[in-house]
Length: 400
Image (cartoon, rainbow, N blue to C red; front, side, top):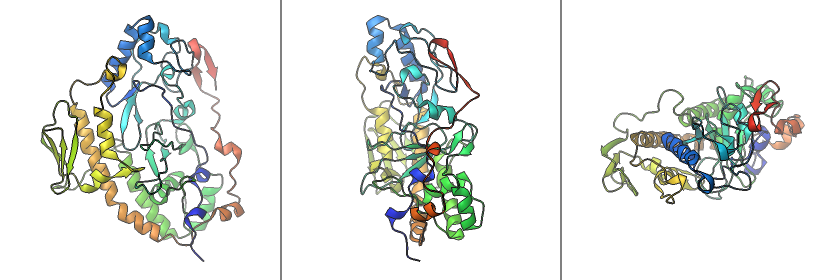
């Protein structure tokens, strides 16, 4: 049977039909790489009065100091008007701010223009998120990343992607998969296929296109098993912090060879010596070239990570409240990021071998004949949550 062209492979949008657009915070100060700074920004906001508070807040058409909104699901931020807020900062939570960069966010609905409550309702234990990256023709990098914490959907190239929860209900219940797809794949492959298996396959085999991520599906049980195993390894690397830390073999592990300066402003890489220079004095090595050059949507991950922690902020704004010196935790996070990228890059040849073995894959037309496509409209909408109370504006309660 002839091979299927790239454009004939089914879209991820059909395989995992419920998706949510990226968050739109509307202001930068409620998010950052340092939780203590977020609390200090909140304290500065609630200490300010009148016009000073409004200037610090940075109102938009969606959010002002007088906007009334419900709580974010699963969190206990206030619902009264920010104009009269005087309480403590809601405890910041971890979020994925673009590829491979976990930061902190104040989980208060009053601070976020478009917070996507439907995502917050299903976040938590058992949930995983597939984050489709913005497509840049000819650019290197994966088409889809995965996260165990809530992602904001930011694309480094500025093009929005989509966020696809693996499950439609809290607690890892009701897979966000085209109805009938897992059963049909199990019959074709002669083995059980779970939602996590499908996500692993997407990570290993998905490719970018102008129409969105396309996912070639094999009929070969051996090829499927290899792809799922590879995808699981990629998933473990992308879920760093959820268990054992990834490590490079001895002799290849990056270390701080010279202390980082208190306020580094520049980053440089010496490929011959495998040295990453931070500022005038800081040195980390060995740093594999593959980690330094690793890109998503055509943007180098390490450079972007560093820039988001060192770019100057406008004086007098809440964004300007940040650590006075480079925190040691950032150094640890940078070492881990280098490790994850190096180990991910090592899996590149296996992904290429998998792609080369994908002959006679499943077409969209075949999925239509099997009754898997088209996906019912209900599968593209969030599931109803009928047993959970959430506080509405000004302390009212709503049953959703």
